[in-house]
Picture 1 (cartoon, rainbow, N blue to C red):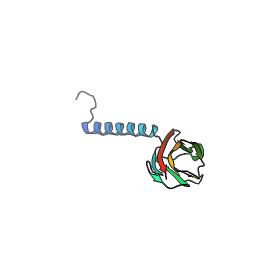
Picture 2 (cartoon, rainbow, N blue to C red; picture 1 turned 60 degrees about the vertical axis):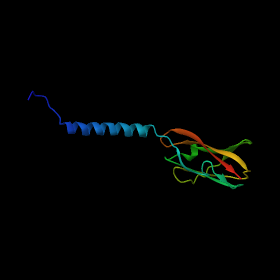
Picture 3 (cartoon, rainbow, N blue to C red; picture 1 turned 180 degrees about the horizontal axis):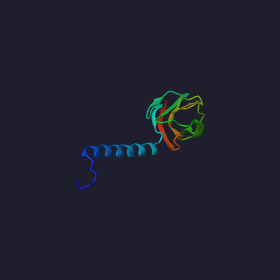
Picture 4 (cartoon, rainbow, N blue to C red; picture 1 turned 90 degrees about the vertical axis):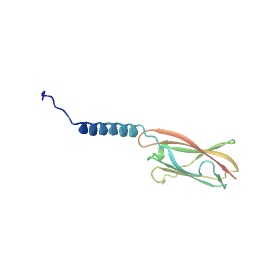
Amino acid sequence: MDGMERSSPQGGNKRSFATIFFLFAATFLLDAHAIVKESTPTPGSVVQGPDITIRLRFNARIDPAHSRISLSAESGTQPIEIDRASPPGTLLGKATGVKPGAYHIQWQVLATDGHITRGEVAFSVR
């Protein structure tokens, strides 16, 4: 031989795959954002008022103390108090005295990874 070490093609492929997998996983974890996985009311639904339970379940743990929910309609926006006993990754609240019409639940959360995300869920009250 010429004195140079050679690696087998299979060993190189395993290392390359492991490196690519690690970089993909690190990128995914560092760029994570809390998104709504499930909501009550569901998007586009029609619910009965005047009292509505609001439940938003996220794909990540969130900090309820630094998160907020509001209910908006043409007539204005009403902040919703978050139940501090909400399960991890979930925000619970209650809107009372809601009249028939179109509404949006607007949310802003701080995930425990430090990312802030915002969004809304549209629904109607009959």
